[in-house]
Each structure stands twice: as structure tokens, then as C-alpha cells.
Image (cartoon, rainbow, N blue to C red; front, side):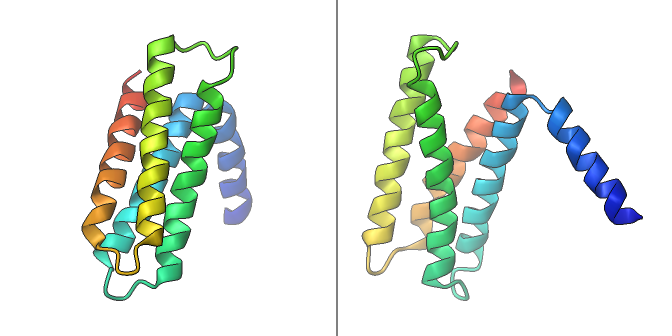
Length: 124
């Protein structure tokens, strides 16, 4: 019975949740995953790190793709800023993945950017 109620709630949430709320939630999920890796650095594996970075990279790839569409309603300057942030995030992620001895503090900027963008989306 509980499972059915939870599924109904999830379906309803998908309907009433705005795209911005969904984007904010996904950014917070990515930030939480990266923060968890940082907090549990000594017990996290390279695969854990790769999985968290990959999720974040895929999310930002989707955002970048969306803002480069000609029919995107956002102002050009906002679209350009998001694309620039996305490029920074993709490059930073690549650097972490290629580093043979990555340091946990390298994740800070990714966590902070995701949280700040998520907060901005919730405020709109």
C-alpha cells in the first residue's frame, strides 16, 4: 500500500513540478553526490568519484544543449553564461578524471556552482 502511495506522489510531483524546480533538484542531487564523495574521500573509490562526476557532466551537457537551441526563450546573455559555466565544468571534470592523484578540494567549485545555480532557479 505504501509503495503505491509513493508512486502516486512521484507521478503527481512530476506533473506539478516546473522545469526550473526539476533542474534545481537535479543540480542539488549532483552537488550532494559530489559532496558525499568529498566527505567520504578516504573510503570512496575511483569508481565512486567517476560516477558522481559523470552524473554532473551529463546534467551540464543537457543544460548546455538546451541553451544552444535557437528556440530557447532565455535571454542571449543568460544562455551564454550557462554555456560558459558548462564548458568550465566539463573542463574541470576532465582535469579531475585525468589526475592520477586528485584532491578532494577540487570538487568544491563543482559543488558550489551547482548549489548556487540551483538556488537561483528556485528563486525565479
